[in-house]
Image (cartoon, rainbow, N blue to C red; front, top):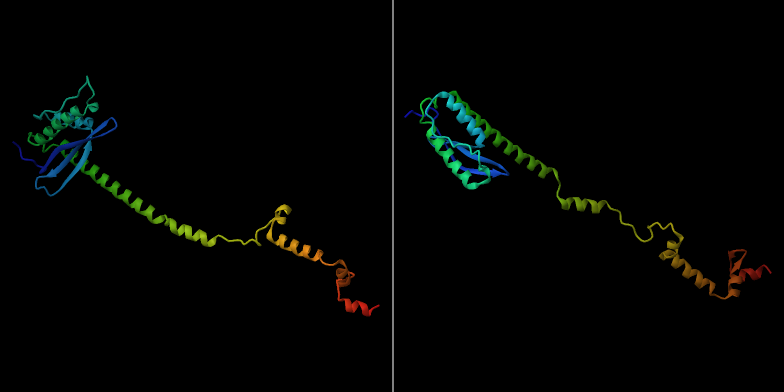
Length: 210
């Protein structure tokens, strides 16, 4: 049994399926349990790691084989079985002689750390974008009140009426028409006495010029 130089352990507790692609969650934990991070890997990526470790000519634990005659990703029972095999593989991997000191394993752990940091950075940038969008858009109530203050309100006399037919239906025209009708209903003699040459005068003044 060889001491784990990285003082770290790897387990595969779960998986998630995105359409036809399956990702296995790898959790990297320090032996003192103070720090841990997780990264999602596909089976093909982990298989490349196993092939690289096989060049060390070390006695590696059993790696889950590929199923050429059936699709594993279409069957959740097969996915769960592969997850258990991957979990067993990584738990026993650091017990193999030469694996802990190999550059292959060191690079794999460092690469996993970089992927985790990129994922965290992306999540933080997405949160900042959402906060900036929320601050940039003013509330809907303020927009409504502003539009109501700037909208002019026209009275009946201020409404432009271009069509004569519309003009005849207006309240100004009706009032003028009513007054003219009242004047026309008076005594014609009285009207002749009160108008001379189109100028309104009194009857007493007209008699003085005779």
